[in-house]
Every structure is written in C-alpha cells, then in structure tokens.
Picture 1 (cartoon, helix red, strand yellow):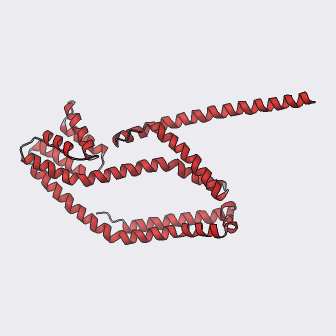
Picture 2 (picture 1 turned 180 degrees about the horizontal axis):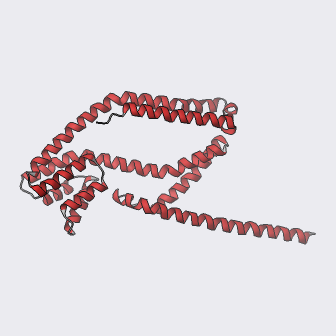
Picture 3 (picture 1 turned 90 degrees about the vertical axis):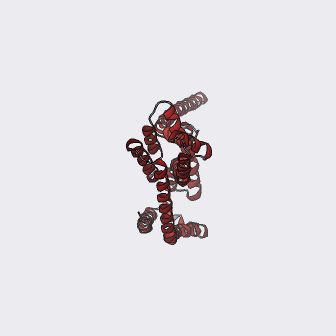
Length: 284
C-alpha cells in the first residue's frame, strides 16, 4: 500500500514538474514575442529621444508593472476584477511614461526654438553661412535642441542635402513652429531671400503666438482645475468610504450590481471629463 502511495505521489510530482516546465516555456516564449513586438516600435522612439535604454527593458518593466499592480489591487480589494484593472494599468505605465517623456521633450524644444532662431539670425548677419550658423547654435544651445540640430549637421556632412536633413528633423520632432521654420528655409534656399530677416520675423511671430497661448491658458486654467476637482471627488469619496466602512464598500467590488455601478461611474466620469476638455480646450 505504501508502495502504491509513493508511486502515486511520485507520478503526481512528475506531472506537476512537467506542467511547470511547459508553463515556463510558454511564458518565456510569450515574453520573447512581446519583446520583439515592443522593440519594433519602441527602439526608434527611444533613439529619437536620445534615451539609451533597450526596448527589452521596457518590456520587462511592463511585465513587472502588471505583477506589482495586480498584487496591489488584490491586496486592496480581494477582487479579481480590481486585480485585472490594476494589472492593465501596470502594463501601460511604461508606455505612458515614454509618451509623457516625448511630450515634455517636444515642449522643451519648442521653448528653445525662439531663442535659437534669434541666434541663427544674428549669426547670419555677422556673415556666417547657414551651415556655420547651425554649427554655432549646436555649441551654444542645450538639449534637446542641440541634439536635433547636431543630427542635421552630421547628415549634411555625410552628403545629405540641407533641405532633406531639415525635413527629417521635422519628422522626428513634429511641431507647427518647426514646420514653419523648415518650410521657410527650404523656400528661401530654392527661390532666394534674406534668411536673416526671415528668421527674425519667424521668431517674432512665435513670440506673439506664445503670448496669445499664455493668455488662453490663464483664462482656461480655472475651468481645468474645476474639472480636475470634480473628476477626482467621487474617487476620493470612494476611498474614504472604503476605509470607514470596508464591509459595505466591498459589495461594490464583489457583486454584479456593484460592478454595474462602478461601470456607470466610470462611464459618467469619462463623459464629464470629455465635455469639460472640449469646453476648456480652445484651438487657435
């Protein structure tokens, strides 16, 4: 009898071991496929932002975010639905961070562009060529502007025309202000014209435009703050009520009716946020 029990125990252990090995191989294969998928679109973005982090690490951060956030959601609510929701948030956190990093870099580039145009205009007035003026700009400016125009200069030294190098810059850094600059330079180089005056006029136009955007931002800041407060108020109240009366609030996460209420709240929050965004977002 003991031999039969030992045999059954051994077979059970062997089956669990085989299943664990198969599960590990499937998981490893899935991670590799996800790494390739992430690397296909992420490496280019990282290179363009001069961020020297491999795409594989971004994939690992996504997987780690899923595990950590899912565990946190389960510990807070002991609900599978909340656990999955937190896991989805953790999965998207690295991508959200990269998008925010790209947005901040573009914003900083636009802030540097006005002074850069003035510098190039003064350099051209001093008798320098456009190539020399851009080279001087790279030495005197800070990233990200110096990085982007440094690529332009390197491209021209490798035989790429100035027009094509500037067009590549516009694709790497999509900006209305930069598009205006690139178009003006290319037209001026093809048809002739005083580049120094063109740069000065563009710089003045961008300054006036920034002033107008600043006034609009100041006028709509109160509406944005009100929308943020109104949007976060239900979430804050829900957290407070969960700590005050957890037994009652757990029904929201463990029953079908509670899930329906949560879905309704999320839907109304999204509708309200969208309407407030459309009201305060003034396109000029």
